[in-house]
Length: 214
Image 1 (cartoon, rainbow, N blue to C red):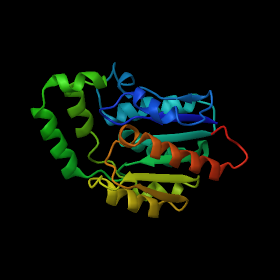
Image 2: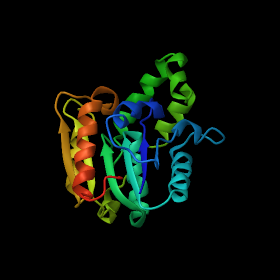
Image 3: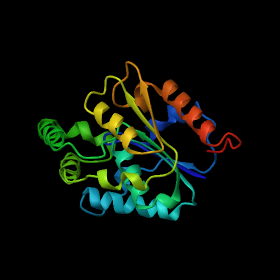
Image 4: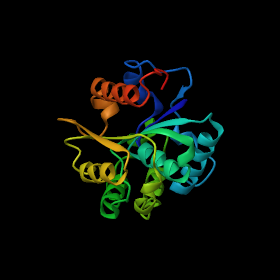
């Protein structure tokens, strides 16, 4: 199985290292860099997803997709379009139907933030604004029944912007279970790597009790 750990917007692939160090990860485990996927194209969600889907298509199936926030949206999108290729799905604080008001508020904040804040992420300020603006119409509600693989939805109890969506998502995917990390916010791979690693290990053992190579 090929395992992909997909970071959120504003993060880099290295953010997964504290989590993965606590787990028995196989050799075929990768953390793609989202910022490198759209460097030659307009930074829209459509182009980002196209590049991400190509990466998944080129990877050996079955796939285990684990994504946080934007990474979770990409993983969810691929799972509903290619359910036959995804063997397990972990969605950490994603939205399955984009909250337009929240995205607009985020873009307003991005516009007043200095460009230097964005440099470490690999995306420029303009790319942040363009990417978020291109996501407003995303809605996977009708496609969620296509997901039949084991799924885990994770959220921090203080992640008020995404908590309701995560609860709903766990209810709409028939194979999903919900895990809430008490006292945690949005970036669980940064804030609570130990708790997140333990949840992932338990989930992988549950879905493949005789196979430790998730």
